[in-house]
Image 1 (cartoon, rainbow, N blue to C red):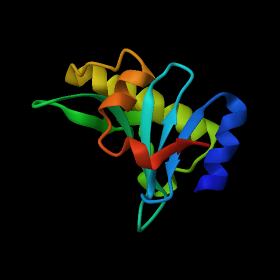
Image 2 (image 1 turned 135 degrees about the horizontal axis):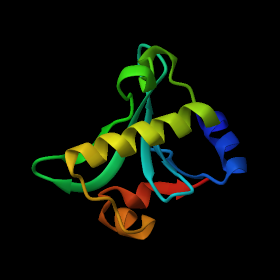
Image 3 (image 1 turned 135 degrees about the vertical axis):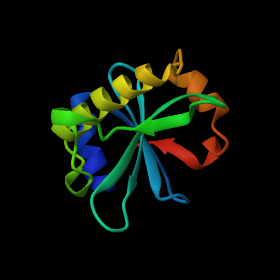
Image 4 (image 1 turned 120 degrees about the vertical axis):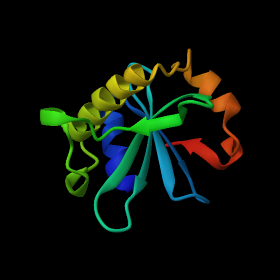
Length: 120
């Protein structure tokens, strides 16, 4: 997964990984935060992160709906898939009424395991 994430850096994405955990975070050019983890059966699971609330949790699916739906068996780590996942997650977060982080620093400061993550 790291090799593929490394490729996203050339498009301006920032990547946070850990040697302790199997998931990573992708920071987009819009400063949206995507959580990504390898699915044990196929592809990857991607969620759109936002400020936690009782009603919305702290992230939502990026799979989308209708014609924008991403088949979870083919979610890959490439520019097109990540852009589509960001769009889908952003739209779903908006539907939920979730509040986005004002900055990456705000997100990182509240992360419970931040000492285990570093920027690629």
